Image (cartoon, one colour):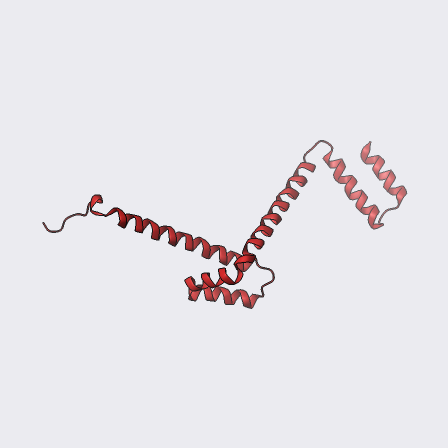
Length: 139
């Protein structure tokens, strides 16, 4: 019976530590790789050819590609991430304002008055027509 089944206590603690460390580093590298790929697509100042070149570099030599990208463009990654978060926040705020404006009592009147005001501002209706239509909406 030389084919023993390895037990948990046969695995040294230092070996378990190194295994956990390598798994952690591998996951951290994957997260960084996907953040870089996202950053490449998010960058508006980079041309399509430059994006394709960076992606090809990241695919062919991934470890070196990640390291070179972080060194060359890492400072601006944070700025682009902050700008994207700000744009997302503004979009959510605009949606909330739009939803709140459209759900209260009298919201149909507000919407009609807004459209009426836009028509007047473009010059499609006269001041007298605007006042008559406004009176109809409000009464």
